[in-house]
Length: 235
Image 1: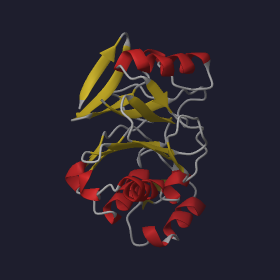
Image 2: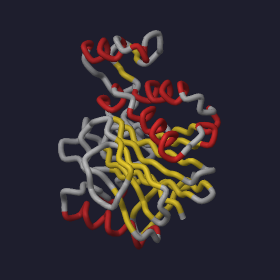
Image 3: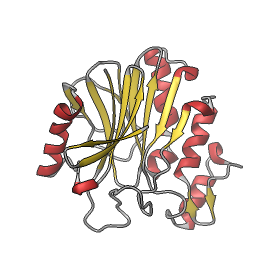
């Protein structure tokens, strides 16, 4: 993992053989809100900044819908591809971005997992789609969990905690501290159910709400918030 400065902007880069993972920060107000002029420009700039031919993303709807990229902007919250020189990414501002890389089949995925996506196990379902569609084996997967709001700052209602605990998948699993929900612990449990080696699961350990090392966008912290963009591409 390395810090990368391009122009005045700061990124976090992870190089994994034939794939690169990139996590944006909000340094110098870098924003990837696809509905704003500056956000559209930032998305376009990825092509020259990282030498890719195309940048793919979704109209995110807080669902468990997984899209195999076909060249169109669709609704959903996870993107999968095996095409090279194509960056697939997700927008976040407290929700969890998860990037996956099958190092044998050379298949990549980007997942947006807010509380709804986490509740509906979108990460687990994305892996299952990779297994079914691309013959991915879980022992070949490398997973990175990007900047998101951590348990320290993510206070939710008792009803939501009860909603999570009522799910069979999270019964008897430590996913919260009183009313502070850990989306990461939920996602880690999904990954553990797929028997992914813990050494292949990495967490950037950046809370979008309270971390001091990196500037980030946070829905809970800022009224006027932008978007981070986490993406992966096959070189």
